[in-house]
Length: 89
Image (tube, rainbow, N blue to C red; front, side, top):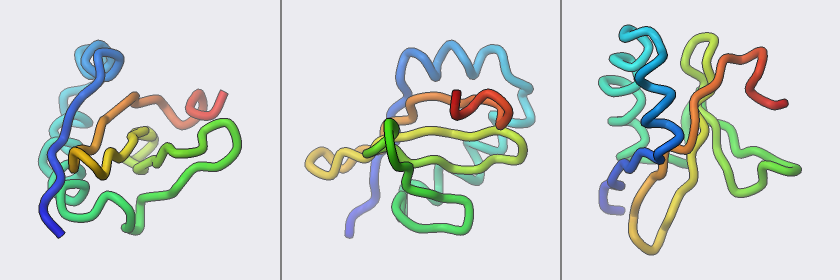
């Protein structure tokens, strides 16, 4: 299995400007390397169901990072980041 590339959606680009720099640093240095190797499995990864089918979420402290996987292009698309209390509304 080759490494996945990481792409950030326009929505996530806007969100990352507003969040604490420590949270984004953690995402960039810890989460992205793990998603590049295996975006399907990990202790903080969960495949979503219901209206969010096809999406995955990665737990980053009190935040939830939502992403999609494009197997044809070998890309993980980071869709959004939300605080836990607002994540599933």
